[in-house]
Image 1 (cartoon, rainbow, N blue to C red):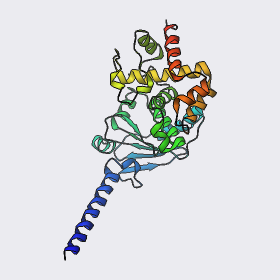
Image 2: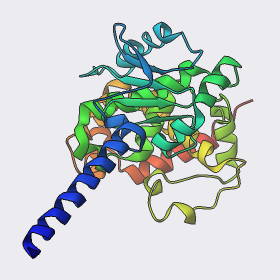
Image 3: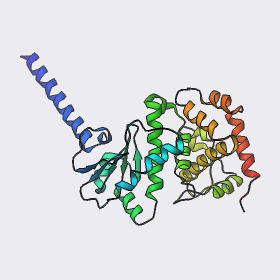
Image 4: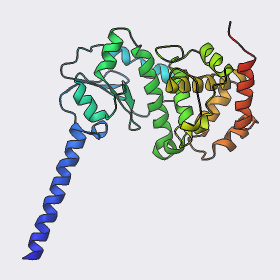
Length: 277
């Protein structure tokens, strides 16, 4: 009899767990990975799959469909699967699934979720939907070409720098322009990129209006300087080489014939000698 009750208890626990898992896939944090989508209208043009939540006034998904090809061309890579775009109309639905108040969020499985306030800001011309979408699509494109394991070790500063550079995001919204970044660096502000998303990130003192947007713009300037100084071909070797090479510093030295530390010194010296008028 005791064995019978034990098996029944285990069965109930498993059933409750499966119900909870189903809830997470449909309405919670696992939604971007769910094979089932309810409450959204699906559209599938040439390059993307778009899910628009019922009640949304957004109709311009055909415009978004042009962005993946432009990002592919810029980075000289190809999407292996169509990106999935989820456009929300309900704030609480987005917050329950995204677990963030960020306007946009990209997931390694090829999904991008867009908040209702991002759509409103884009319609009000507070932000550029094109710029933000190209930023997130560049993340998805890199994810698809490197795989999950490589993504864990890929330099996070470089992911953001590439996305900022690809989307031409410098100088838009709250992000400082190239000239503003240079001016702030000349005043002594510099965030060593290797400390981004590490336990040491808060130890770096910065006298800037917005710490995060400054760092993102600085990373874009580093990408810009690499391409300007050493050429796009070498940068492509660097960007794609990190998808398979575990040692960043060794790969950097092999491609650029300079250590990553010395490169940063070179960048700072370049900034000091190139004031924008």
